[in-house]
Length: 487
Image (cartoon, rainbow, N blue to C red; front, side, top):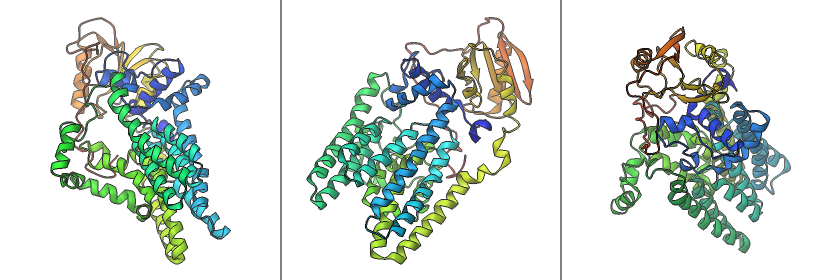
């Protein structure tokens, strides 16, 4: 809630998810005008054509109780919190047979490291994402696998597949690890369950990507971010087969990708590498290091939260093996991991909680909240990305961008750059264009302007996406991805 209070949560992405889940609550497909208009999707486009996230429908009943974007923030916090007792059970499985005191300490350590993990703090800092479900589902899948409750493990794995289209690869990797472990233990049931998941998980991902998303209107290749490998999946596969070294070349270029891997693994003292469970993280890491999209490289977004359950579980498994073989080494590694992960958590989240200035909006954002209160319910609005989530529950809002949309109200900053504008000059020019073509300034303070459309004068360049609209992707700013920790 700190980010909400400080006006750090934006239309991209809290506003998008709020509009989508609210649509589910009204028994409609998950549509988001913020997403659709800005990226020029046709009217009525469903977010199920953007990402395979049907699990979000589970949150719809919450909107019957409280129709507010903050319900998503509370739900995400609760879903993350569910993982604490699950991690404690995982620790008990890993340290089964050890002294009761050791088991208790392992459970306490695992629960603590998980709960204050910097990936969860980052994800919460940035608002709500589908990772809210992926974290507990992954943990429950892993815990049920360790408990040899294979039917329950398979159910959680299938639910995990419904959180995002690529999570079937994680479920498949889990099945492979489960099958190998069960085979070594002579457990035929576990081996059969593992083989089934190893086949079904990737199949679900393949069907979601190649059939479901296109069937829901998803444009082909819209999220293809692997141009360094090939123009499309077929070209990339041919390139990799004929020149396999390109995988290593792309993975380390630019060097921030190497820094990302070092941070992710180093903050747990490299412990995840000692367990086969780390295999589950490989598809998610490969997606990021092979990507051309700079948004995938820093460690300040929500992507690392998908990895966190895997990394914590793998670390506990490694520590348990070290304890059985070398107790002194196990204690040293555990202490090192605790110190490193705690330090990372302080840098990327915990430290911000004790800073008063991070609990209040910055001076350039405060006027946005004041101006938003002047916009009447039910109005059509083009709003600054920062204030959009405060308007989704009572107006028809999209974010203000380079293209005029003809809304009744426009709320925009003109002296501080805001996504997706390239500069404050562009923002000021946008305001001047509207003032010259039918809009009246009704409020201005500290670089924030509120405009109201009083005449239907044609606006140059105005465009509203239609049935034949071609979706577009905006260019990523040059400073994104240049620094591992740049917010």
